[in-house]
Image 1 (cartoon, helix red, strand yellow):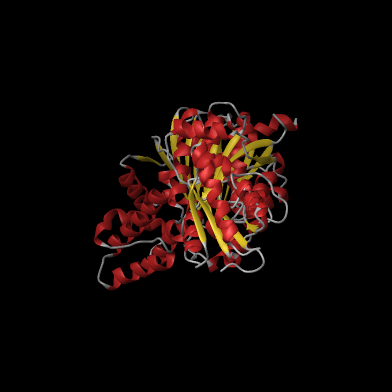
Image 2 (tube, helix red, strand yellow):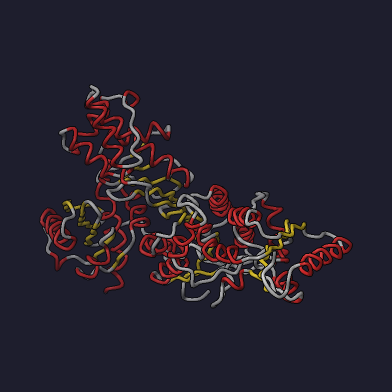
Amino acid sequence: MTDKVRIAQLACGPEYSGVQKEINDAAAAVGAEIFFPDIALSDVKRDLTLFGLDVRSPDLKLAIARAKELVEGRIEADAVFIATCFRCAEAAIVRNELRRYIVEHSTLPVVSYSFTERTTSGTLLTRMEALTTIARRRALLAREVQEGLTLGLDSGSATTKAIVMQDNRIIGKGWLPTIEVLKSAEDAIALALAEAGVSREEIQAVGTTGYGRYLVGQHIHADLIQEELTVNSKGAVFLADHQHGPCTVIDIGGMDNKAITVHDGIPGTFTMGGICAGASGRFLEMTAKRLGVEITELGPLAIKGLSTRVPMNSYCIVFGTQSLVNALAAGSTREDVAAAACHSVAEQVFEQQLQEVDIKEPVIMVGGTSLISGLVHAMGTLLQTEILVPIHSQHIGAVGSALLASGFIREKR
Amino acid sequence: MAKIFIYPTTSLILSDMVARFGHEPLGAALGIRERIQTAGFDSPPLQVTPEEPKKGLRWAAVEVPSGVRGRMAILGPLIDHAEAAIIINDADLAFGCMGCARTNELLLFLLRHRGIPVLDLTYPRSEEEGEIFVAAIREFLEKLPKGGKAE
């Protein structure tokens, strides 16, 4: 193996969509390189017959054959990236079946993505970073106990969270809306340090995650700057006290959503993103505002209502809000509207994202939206399971960062 | 000499046959003039930018996947310039193939509705069929005017 993480690309269309360079750039930014598994024509014919999915597009046939060669160990790779055109039905079938096949028959971390010509390396960066971390930094992710005095910071799109941990316990918390990224981070850290009763100088290691992780991480000289997919997985299993065995982590965020299958605290497959803001925490914020309640009151309000009484489809935040206004104008109760909004967000995440990961119980919901009980209830109903919401679930990224950062204390010494 | 669109556009054998019979083959090699790196079956050009799928809107609507539109941006202009076409159906992968089935369907439709002479053949599966296949291509190409535009 080379020093770089080698990611095998199974794809149809990225080069003709003008996004191959974006994929390469995203991989290069996290110390990885994309390669195309080289196989003979006779292998393609044999592998296609054995796989049994008779597709028409030759590039998809090639992707299937390449997947088989990887799974059967004839080609070495550290991870797999599956990419096909958005809106192609044939490719969507292949993408899903290949992801499932690779997960079931190998230990290769895999991520699948459907792109358009507007896909940028920035969009892909977090996914690539998670893929390379899972592939090469398993020792880091194996940490189950927080040691020493560490600080974790999650600079999210909507809120900034800071956590101070000492000897496996949370001793300080800070949670503020993200306004100016650096200032919000400094203020959240100050809150957490004050609650913990420790000074900045006493902190032995710092970890950052979230959208602002690089900016804040460099500013506060973080020991670990890590994307939120792996960090949230660690934080979730730590807080839920489920460090071993399988589980699924769902984080409906302010700007995007994450669904991650986890085994022994290490992410397996994951999806990230959402079709529209209508499936995000933002929509619930807007709903709360329109209903004249605090976001913290939306959940209990929704629990009292019945979602089926209000037609709502929040695939678009604009149309979702329109449905909301129409329902209120038609005499629907605030409880029913709140329930419908929660159901709509849960349903969209269920339809768009959870179909791309194989749900493993228990299902753990984390992030700020996990405190909205109506949303948790709606997701539980859709998945027909009881959802686990651990204490401090809104601080998940910061907790995961503080936990993982403690691995750097010894290095510093 | 007539401009002959070849399908599959990547078929070097077909391209060579057209050239040997005195015509100009229009295939992927023409559309992809610069550096080529093998990443897929149809040897994609890395110089394709996100602008190509936008140019492809001339042939396919915005709801059509970007990969189809990007391919059409390269191959569509060749169809516009073609004076005749040779289409080999169900070709073996080794004969030449193109990565996306949806693009291929659109290309064939456009070729058949261009109003130019089109030779539609099925890929031969035996030596005997192979001889008939080559003879049919030769006959088609010989009938096309070599000195000017095809009629």
